[in-house]
Length: 82
Image 1 (tube, one colour):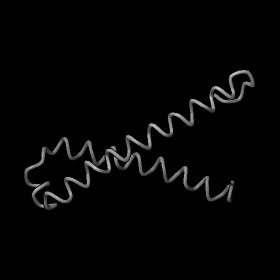
Image 2 (tube, rainbow, N blue to C red):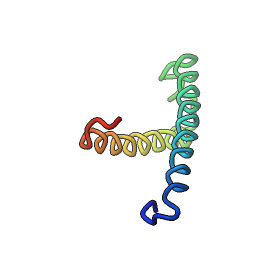
Image 3 (cartoon, rainbow, N blue to C red):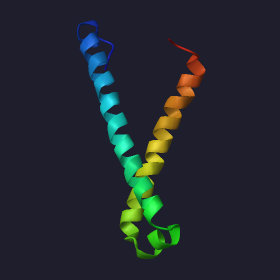
């Protein structure tokens, strides 16, 4: 997507903006999970939470973990960059 020269700068700016927006949204999700963790025990969540909702949340968290772990692996391979 960022290989053609004319749109490269605009594409990079959009990528940076999207990363920043994702960071804010992920922080919001982390806060929501922390609220659950602090207010309810794991047993309460499992006993009274809707099973499909829990499974969906777990699948989303696992997908995010895989995605960002892949990015982390590439960052480690590329070495320090600043």
